[in-house]
Amino acid sequence: MHEITLCQRALELIEQQARQHGARRVTGVWLKIGAFSCVERSALAFCFELVCRDTLAEGCELNIEQQEAECWCHHCQRYVTLLSARVRRCPDCLSDTLRIAADDGLQIKRLEIE
Image (cartoon, rainbow, N blue to C red; front, side):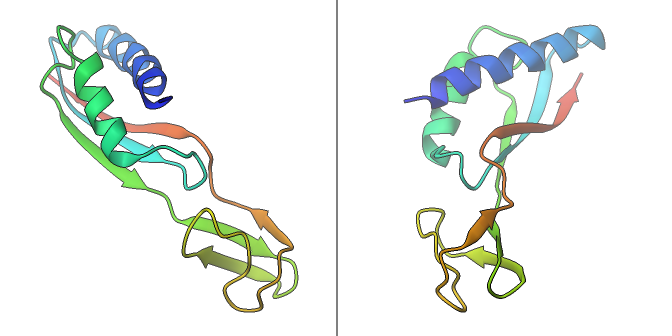
């Protein structure tokens, strides 16, 4: 489960930013999961709550956004959205000559602090 490692690293960055801005606590975190990151939303939420215990972010509201699986289809010459990140064929022409445009990571989009 790599979600725990992602959450630990995210928390390090979150606490670093919170301290730099003189925060007493973090009240909200907005994360964006890349479409091709292989991160499971429920596992991420569970791990985030776990790693935040006894930190500035304990009890904060976690908001998770899932990015769409967007790719460039060389055959259609346009961006297409895949129904699943596991399916690597254009939904329109069934071509497998796709270039992934979506992210494969995790981003901290916003922090709310007191």
